[in-house]
Length: 428
Image 1 (spheres, rainbow, N blue to C red):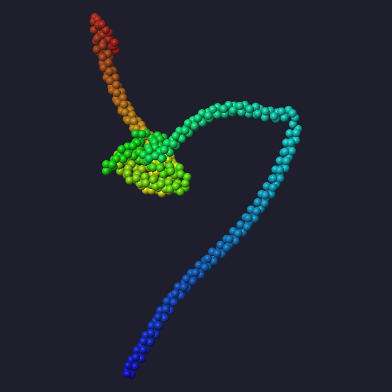
Image 2 (image 1 turned 180 degrees about the vertical axis):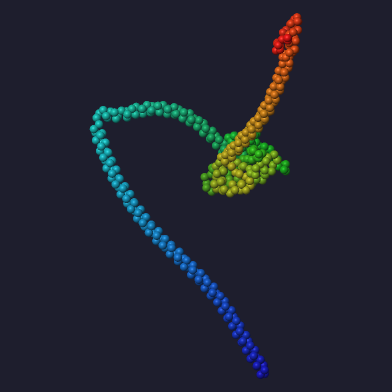
């Protein structure tokens, strides 16, 4: 029993010793960690104090600069105030002098005018009288001109009246087209498109085609309204089949609620046509080498601007589907740009042809000159041969001409005489 108690006491003492040892070691580690933390904080404190001293130096420098600038500002402000004061005094002085001078001039002129005699007054009024006479003459001439212009204006008003009636008829046709079926609207849009094509300067059958028949890979037939040909064998397709019935209802409606409804229908109609046009895949049709986009033509500028003003997304939607929505004004600008490109292309082609023709002509000229030089050489050689033969014929002792002449001297009676005479001396 005593042994057990002894063992228990021993175990308790050992346990206490271990606990004390553990606490001692833990305390030692904590002291070491605290010592390192204190050292780190001391270093940070030192750095902060150095930074503080640096900031204090900067602050002192800035304070000095601020004081200098403040002093300079006060000096310049005082100088400016002094200058303003001097300018104000000078202005007041000039005003007084100007006022006195004006009064003096007025008094002098009054005295001079009162001292004028009748003859001087007549001389003074003579130019005025001449001006009145000239004015009367000009007034009569102006009246005659205005009378002629009135007559011309009357004629112009007649033309304007006729034009107004024509515009009214066209507006009536437009209203009928808008109120009619989509086919009629399409025909009217094609008519507007044809007028724009005519104004663009492009030539039908050359730079553009109307209602050309194209086929897809599946054999389906398409007839785009217009195919614009561009240089380098590229094409642009124009489609004008846009329904504007909702736009007509919007324009003629006064009820705000219904106008909003028709506006939405108008934009929806445009979006629907964009999808239909995109589905046709004109760029994949046989017989046409289109660019990556198609022009969707809206024949009424107001319908285009209305949709663009209230919902610009349809324009973005069209672009994402490789379609550009154009109005009469933007289409005309586009077509005239294409016409300018064609004109420039033709000018370049003509310049190239001229250069080619000039090159060919120059080469022919070189060949002609070379051949002409050969002819000259041959002519020179022929002349030399001729001179040699002629010399042999009529020169030298016993030449042929001399012998023929001797035969004649011996009694021969020829019917003709030789045109050449011998150059040789008589034989001894």
